[in-house]
Image (cartoon, rainbow, N blue to C red; front, side, top):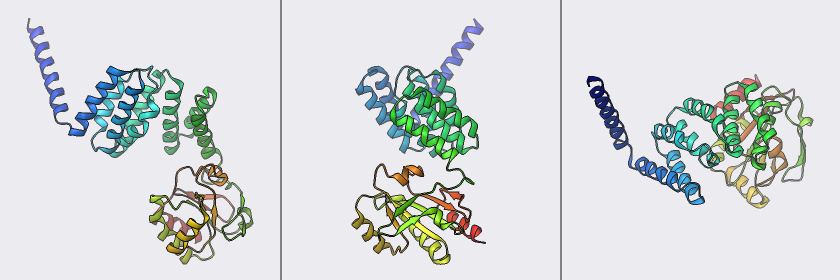
Length: 305
């Protein structure tokens, strides 16, 4: 009897704590929890997947969502092919709360249980990028190679190929991939012709909001170090629009039009997300990449010395 009473008291306390935890959630998260329950009741169906997408969008934008995410994603049935829908929201939630490492630990735990190859591969792409960023290159390569073997979808195959290119061809210290092109003025540019000079390759677009704050830093580098070769690859389709933007921003170095989609140079340098900057040293090797603002300026200053 004492044991039964103790168990009942513990159950009440656990239930109460759970209720308090849910009650303390922000209104948007309370709504997200209700929608998640609706997803479980309606699955599997396109309507259920849409509801889960709405939940993931909430997770992506609300501070403090990661605790709810950690709880609820464990309840997603392993046969549901929904992970590509929620991974961005999942990652943003853990990143916003400063718990990204924990989020990746949880994905590592969940990945082997997932049945659909598309969802499992999408998780592996996320994990491989994380492992690569943490210096666990061999682990990342094995993950990408598994995806190539599974061939789950054209998009995920492309992600795996880009991941392997980032590791094998675009790593710091590797020779920068050579290319030849013509700039907006009709002048030919070949990267290997600039051996002996420091080259800054900047991928940018007129429509790219995050690119705009980087322009003053690039102008500063060009002004401070006139011997540096600057070239910007514009992911745009309209040359007149690019020229007008260059005039407004006072940019005088060469610009190359690579197209908004399927640009050859963007593909060569994995510049699907921008801004993206590569710094090539005098030996033609990648000395730095993906730096912004003062960090880019500082890296250039060090390289010039």
